Amino acid sequence: MTESMQGKTTVSPEVLTAITSLSALEVPGVSRLAPVSGGVNRLFRRGISDGVRIEAKDNIVSVDLFLILKEGVNIREVSRNVQQNVARSIQEMVGMETGEVNVHVENIDFEGDSGN
View 1 (cartoon, rainbow, N blue to C red):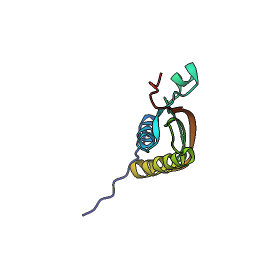
View 2: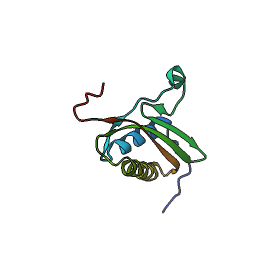
View 3: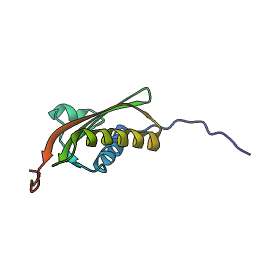
View 4: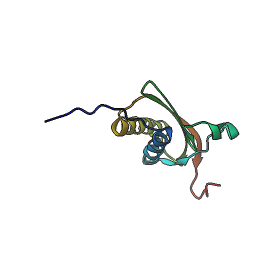
């Protein structure tokens, strides 16, 4: 006997942010996430974390990623791979569609750069 369960699953912006961050960082050529500007305002908004801004509306997720890439990589190729990996991860893990994944390359890590 099969019963269908009724109910609703909600996903917090923090979960979407974590999925997005991890998906971006696993792409070869990405060094780390860059801080998101916004000062005090970002302390009071959900869906904003270092390197990631998430907005979800009508089951569609829009992402802004602020990245620091490794020296010598093809920026266009790495950005495209990040976009694809983030969209795929969000779809597979939470079943939400991605409206857009905007990649903002904020800096390049040069060899020997301490990141400070």
